[in-house]
Image (tube, rainbow, N blue to C red):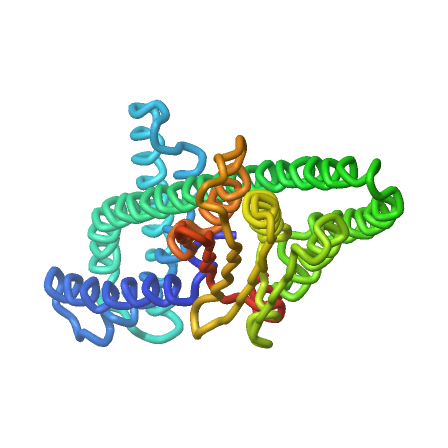
Length: 358
């Protein structure tokens, strides 16, 4: 389909331009060969609309000879097309002049009718060339749009691949930690180790289910975190307490799956596990008009030596949020003397809104 018909605004502007040309052509014919302006407009008006449709053929000429090809060949082809189109316009003018003379008695005389064909031809060539220029501009614009769309799609594909890669790092990470916990219980408390294996099986089923989705609700993410902490409570017993406070509005917000998992693991491994008396892991979530804020806080022993890999989970979370939306997400870390707190800020998005956006 011709691009002029793809937009009502574009088609309207095209018609307005040619409608403006019709009285100018009639005025030129009246100036060259005096006659009533109405008679000249009756001749020039329909012919101008006819040539407006004829000039649309420039689109296919331009597509057959796109910019960047052989310039000399393209120029000759375009000029020849302009001469041919103008010749067709002259033929249509001769026929229309005869129809006006015989059918409507609008006849400035045979000599004048023939003389009117000369300005038609002389005007037809540059008008067609202007149409060619306009169509080349449309082609350039559409090529630019296509290139931008391709770049955008490539960026989206790269971002999705990066998110999948980052998310894939999480599964072996928390599985390794969980197996270490089971191994630690196997000898001193076999019953607890068996119970922990059952909990781990349930946890893995739920984590694989959520991990296969692009987004999950914060409520589902917190439920998964609770399952993980239940596993660790088998190991730590009363040393590990959990305090979760989340607003109802925050629970409905969408987040990347397994986003909190590395933070909860770090809170257990690098916080509670290093303290003889253990401690409480606090998870808070609230939302405002534009942002969802989730915080995970754990106590820490300032005298405990740093462990290898302590920053892996946090960097994974930071990288995932950067890949999601670098401008609207943030990770804030508060390293206090006796506590460690990570606060995540994400744009608010709910399930209904996500469906509407597709």
